[in-house]
Image (tube, rainbow, N blue to C red; front, side):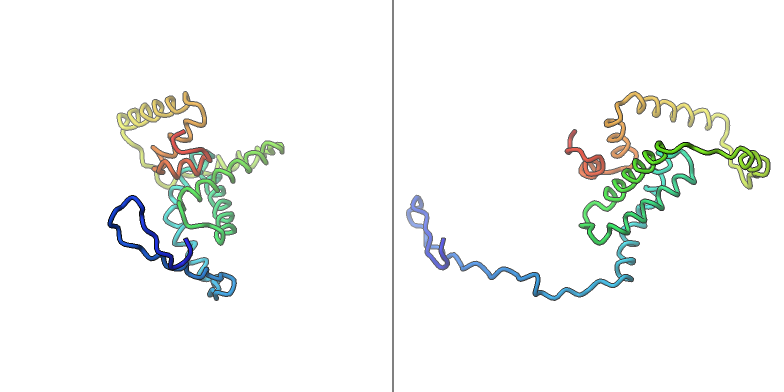
Amino acid sequence: YPANQHVSDPHAPSTPAVTVPAPAEPLDLESTPVAPVTEAQLVATFEAVVLPHLPMLLAVAKSKTLHQQDAEDLVSDTLIRAMKGFPSFDGRFPKAWLRRILENTFINTYRAKQRRPQVVNTEEFDDTLRTHKVDSLVVPSLEEHALMMATRRQVQDALNQLPTYYRDAVWCVDVDGFSYAETAEILQISIGT
């Protein structure tokens, strides 16, 4: 309707006329001054968003790589990529955003490793085994260990029987505690799939 035109409902017998105000002027975003973000502010915001999710990232990385050092490397690579992409991050679902970066980083690393042969220095490995000492060792009771291993095996066997796309969804929701929306974003599937 044109601005300030009186509009009435023909089906309502005694409805008073309503005045429709003129639309507001659109914002000119190019001429609106925006304070530049300093590098220190960007780093502080990045840390505030990312640091609470580091334990989750490390746990997921460890479940994928099966080695502590590889998991730490994967998390480091993930954080580097997240920092590079942080200025374009919309702020929604930071946990899912970080998990997606970790997934992509893992896949890219895996593909790169598949393309080159693995070189193993057995002398260095033997030296490490001979000189490695354990500072502290906490050993559960035999009963605790047996129960823990049986439960772990049952859960792992059940998960392994699922197709990969179901397994990843179950892992995200039930183990990592992601919402369905976050899981859908991580796995790049529609909600409820």
